[in-house]
Length: 176
Image (cartoon, rainbow, N blue to C red; front, side, top):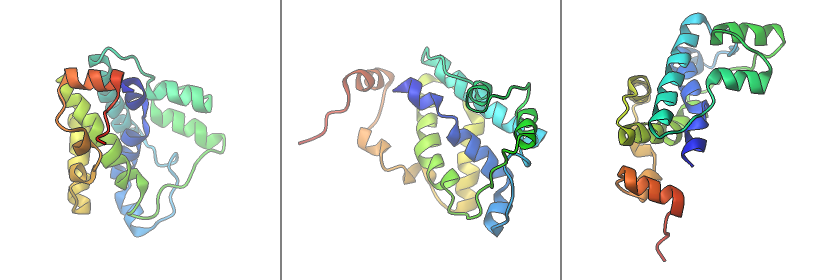
């Protein structure tokens, strides 16, 4: 469960892409994701990935990097995400970015992808300032509390590391 949860790069990448292109999204512009994954945006995504890898390592988990994902999913390699994105554009892969502020990149990935990742970071004693800052900034932009929007974590209750390990192994008992 932890490996699967911490292997998902979409929430962190979607947050970085949304933060860097929020006015485009809000104005409903037609824009291309890979064309706009510039060196600056790429460095943000790479730093977010490093935080995710650090959280996974704190739990003794080895997960694929964003570079592994690009190699395995798209067959491209490079020493930066912007260079990889340039290759993808040359190969004809340049999907449209979100055009509505109600995008799943924020409304789903922040509360249900990043908030749990931050909970895991807290349990592991790992700092994730970029993940945390992104959640706070998007919350301010949207006028929402994305932590409160996650209605699943409260059902699990307060977690300690030993409780988490037990739940991962034994599952969660559903009240009858």
